Length: 103
Image 1: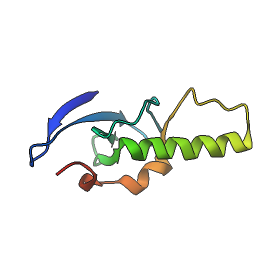
Image 2: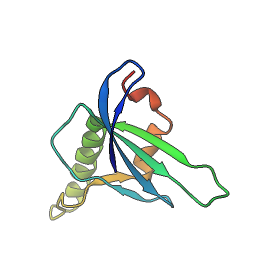
Image 3: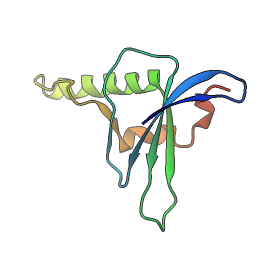
């Protein structure tokens, strides 16, 4: 789900929120770089556990996707870029990185 939001400083930007209920793979389709787009990947486990949030710029997502695709194609040249996204392991560097969002 994508939202138009405004920072405390008055800057408008968009946030796409994508959720998982267990660690896995957030599917994020590839699109041209949009500096006004950010992602909040939400891990919302069972009710007894706290949710976790991972915050990425669109540039961060594209960089991760490109690097992951290059590694996969090095192992198997037939791998296509049809399914893109961010793996659980790749999201960890962005846990609670709310500072990535515009001020």
